[in-house]
Length: 215
Image 1: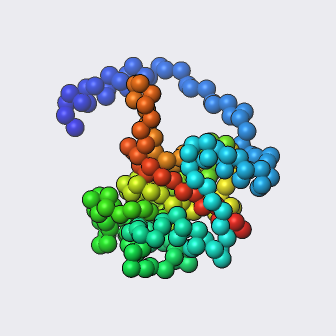
Image 2: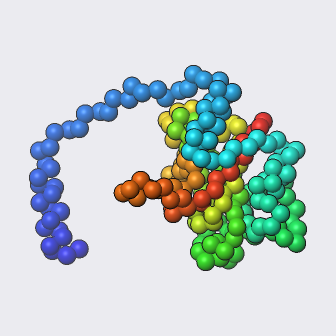
Image 3: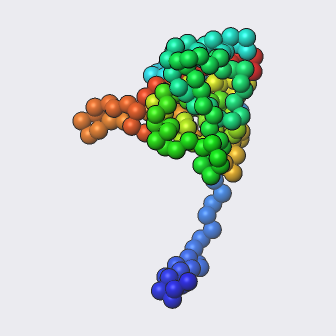
């Protein structure tokens, strides 16, 4: 460490030596939901639609068909290594999937340019907060690394019903910060100083949310 840096840090420590102890934070906000499952799901769907996401329902028996409809007849899409293969439609001559590894350091990881060339990405999710309409991806094997859900223009995200909670504290409890967290509230959108809305600047322009019933 340089002497100048050490001198700066020493002065900071000295200036803080007699600082008062910070009071304990008051956590009097709601931490447990009082809504039932149906009410919680309804709230999430309402928020997602308000954020211009597309919401669909599926079961284990028809989820591959629902995802196929969202992808269309012609598409090349990427999936993470841990995604349930039974969720995916069969590859055809015009609709095929490629699997991305869990890390940019692993063989099989797609480059940013390769990700930009695919039409869509299909992932699962860790937890969804109905109160804010936010879907959390925690870089788990079924969700993949952050790049695959941020670079492609179309994101098909599976949300199992059992992972939907009402409140932010409930969602945070299901997250581990040992891995990167991506929070999604609708398709990517931003506005300039004249309030002109532009979509797709920081992520996918299209967000299709598939709520998986019974899971």
